[in-house]
Length: 157
Image 1 (tube, helix red, strand yellow):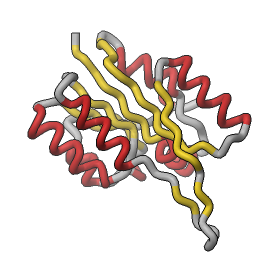
Image 2 (image 1 turned 30 degrees about the horizontal axis):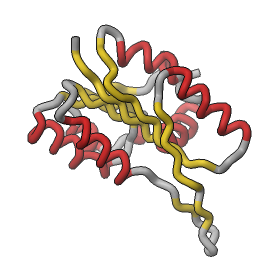
Image 3 (image 1 turned 90 degrees about the vertical axis):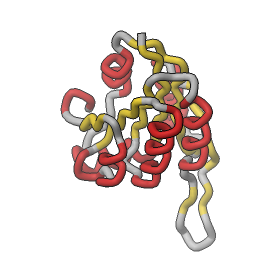
Image 4 (image 1 turned 135 degrees about the horizontal axis):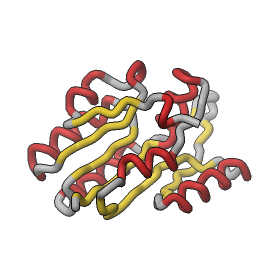
């Protein structure tokens, strides 16, 4: 049985599915599809914490599915912009697990992760899968993935 590690860029998936489809991502359907016949070694969902009740409820849903939710505080800058991405955290965790699994599954469209996938494949020999919204996933990320799975109707609510 293949061992998998799952890494979800929650903000990226939220905004890309909202922008492209005006719908929400179905994490339960994703879990069923991605883990079928596989052993989940770890599954992290990386999110920004604004502390509101609706968001906390969503985080609990993720936990109930099987994800460990990692949170960073939402930072509002004085100029009105916001900060709160998990790129470095996702990368460090994925490298930590690359030697322990057969497959790394990344949910994100962020092209910054292309180097991570290249290293995981070339140094650790793992298979890499990326789930993303086709129109909003960086071509470099799609090209770096061993397998690109388009988020489509069956993975949406």
